[in-house]
Length: 294
Ligand SMILES: Nc1ncnc2c1ncn2[C@@H]1O[C@H](COP(=O)(O)OP(=O)(O)OP(=O)(O)O)[C@@H](O)[C@H]1O
Ligand SMILES: [Mg+2]
Image 1 (cartoon, rainbow, N blue to C red):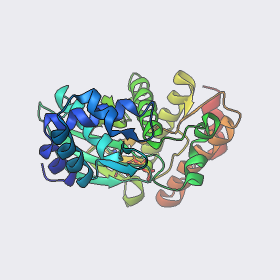
Image 2: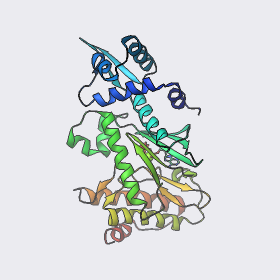
Image 3: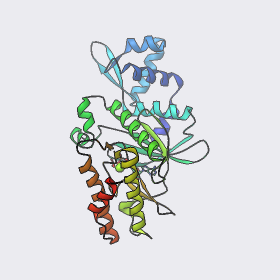
Image 4: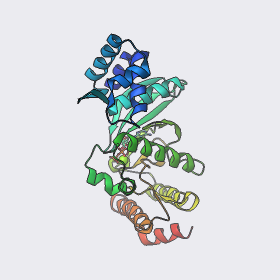
């Protein structure tokens, strides 16, 4: 355990976790949970509670607001701790490793399962980039007008986990989902390189066909479209050179009014990239027709 996240997690005692847990639960009612409310729920003696709150605040797991009554809200880091604790106690995660990726809307850590398998922990962070950008890939947020980024991140994790659960019934070219909790999704760890960094492939045609197979399955068996497909969301795994499509939370249903355009765009991006980088001559419109006709 080396990352900052792991160090903070190790420093938490059960009382601190209980306080975090009650603050999270009360966020349904309050934006900032009054100290009096936390005291009633946790039943900690005032001095003890004060110490715990000031510790959590100093570690930036909670944020204080001083109004007519002092209140606290949970930060992403606080939510990380709750998710991590749950996944550790459920026996999904044994040890947390380094941060391996910072996406626009997530942080990715490598970790170990109790059986020693390498796994990936994706902590969703919706709202980190600008609201406008978020709306571009997630129009459903606008439709529901929710304001809590923590809640949106939980929803995003749930969406990603559900999509992966469905996809793995039909294909091995997506990471296999192990578990999710709150805004965290645990999947298999892919030993490989993102497609945009790959210079050479033994059989690029075959790799592209495998990607198209996933697009087809997603569309025809599950009824979804990835929606953000590109060389950045495909990892070429080694030594097999199988392409694995990652990053699914923003998927669209095929009934969506723009579904056809989004599907066409996804296919276009990937095909164009393979044609350019690996000198293929695949026709993107033809692929599109093949996908929609099953
Ligand atoms: N299962 C995995 N195994 C290994 N590495 C992974 C895995 N999942 C993600 N990564 C790494 O983390 C990076 C970000 O992952 P992902 O695309 O899922 O997050 P994101 O926040 O949605 O990214 P962005 O919004 O920038 O596209 C990937 O480019 C990859 O390098
Ligand atoms: Mg990505």
